[in-house]
Image 1 (cartoon, rainbow, N blue to C red):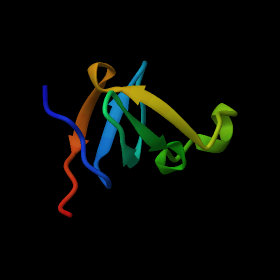
Image 2: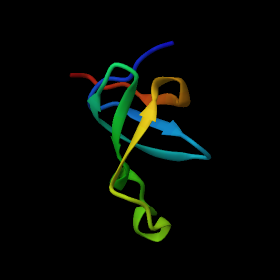
Image 3: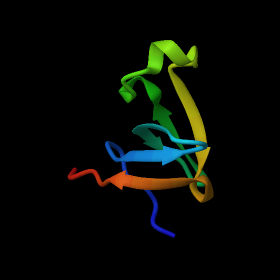
Image 4: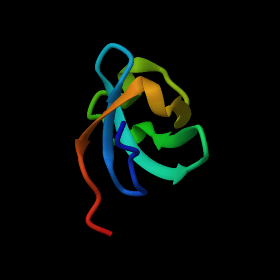
Length: 62
């Protein structure tokens, strides 16, 4: 399993996506405002996603 890095774009749970802000031992903190329809979905600005539950869409270059 490949672990995302800060700045990576990930996809998880039914098509939600976001930018990784912090990488923890078992999870990442994701900024959901990356999505164009963020305001329409009425979600919190950030969420925590376990490493097992996401797919990396675009790797960070940092």
